[in-house]
Length: 281
Image (cartoon, rainbow, N blue to C red; front, side):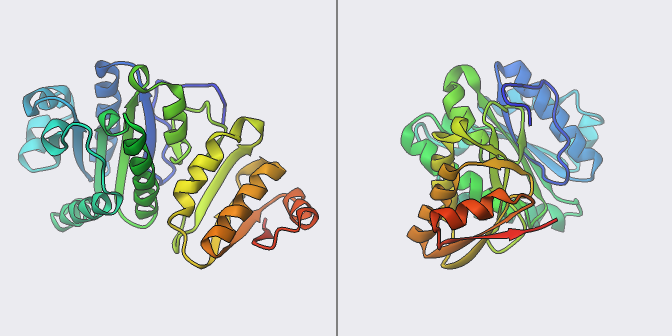
């Protein structure tokens, strides 16, 4: 991860097609959405564009896709106006959103596609604190869904409209993206509520990590939750204390799987009974 860097090209998804994409204007979003959707079409997926604007405008944004007319006629390409789906200031229901995409993913597979891939400009759904909180919970819920099902999404946000702070918070809940000014990623992994923690948890993370962890831990169940931290290169004591506090609050033990020796020593020194470190290769 390269903190402070921002790319104009889509990253390799490495089998996890859930991207957070910060854009500066409508044309940039449309170009990145076409790239994301063209890749999906090449993999046999049904693709859908969701954004503000009329259906005619959204179709116009996609006409440069390969064999657009044929793909449109056979239902491989779809569009949906955000204006027609959500009202102004709507606060999404995270569980209902996941149910909707589950049904649409199942429908795509039943129609003979290998899965569903959506490019969505959801800037209008995170403008207020209440909207942002609900959508952050949804982002993690749908990310966990994507870890197990054939659904992929590019969640795009306007940097001029939202600002870097909001985008950094949302980026922290995605496995991939171009907004790398946040030094860590906390996202779904495997099954049973397991999560992955990548990057670095240091002084730069002290504001965003508790916020992201709160939305993630809200979906933990009593028992144990695995945090796969093999790609976490550094965690300070503040990060461990945050994990322990959330685990205690949820009646959960965090099983922190890491390649590093220092977390186990810090857990012992701090006496954290709700965090267990497992050394892995």
